[in-house]
Image 1 (spheres, rainbow, N blue to C red):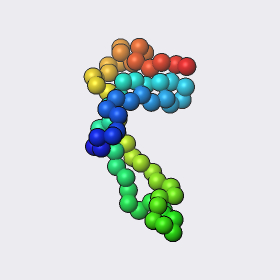
Image 2 (cartoon, rainbow, N blue to C red):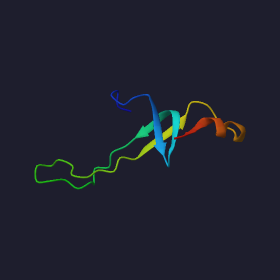
Image 3 (cartoon, rainbow, N blue to C red):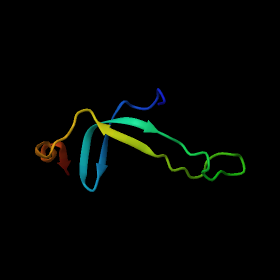
Image 4 (cartoon, one colour):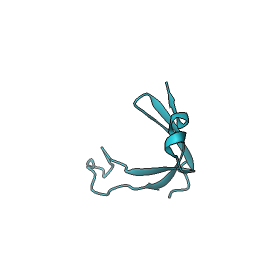
Length: 67
């Protein structure tokens, strides 16, 4: 993983914030489209996130924050 990537992140999805997450892996496909100068014009960046601890069914309601 790149040293410039933040170790802890939060994610907002469907009006809920999921925090604290850690990045497990970040990849960058080399087949994305480029312009005449070789710079990416569009790039999908797959990212795997995980929690620091396991979340059980009883923990889930307290884990997500609805906006």
